[in-house]
Length: 203
Image: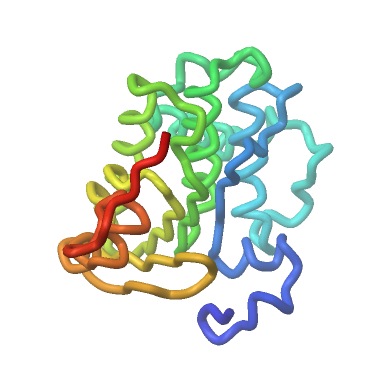
């Protein structure tokens, strides 16, 4: 697996992030004991920890880095969480924790956003918020979004290109309309039996 000429499999996780690839996890990966703002500030700091910020480290006094704090607040504002910046992450509802994960990715300013089932565990009311955030990220055509998702309605709504795996094998790759109409995809993911197939009923 290569990205911009670099073999990602040979890189440590922090190096992959530095190369411009950031991801969320199916299971939340946040700092639950820290506040919402502190979580995003760490991501802002990580994204800007080059030579121009020499001397900045995890133990530095944040009051002397107001510009970075302001950037973190701006990211939270973009995901409609600025009013919760002082809230401990552990006390947030699941939907807000998912939104915070997206905020962390935005703070890292990657070239590639990777989402692993971003609406997992979310209610029908919460899921559209995450989908809207991903839709906004899509507006920046310089960025690439890789979304792993089993909910076909989510895939159909967001994807420009769909790659389908079934039992570890590539079975379809193309634009949404063509892939979703594929007999293999219809049978494997939409529960539609191929024409002429016998349907067995058991008691």
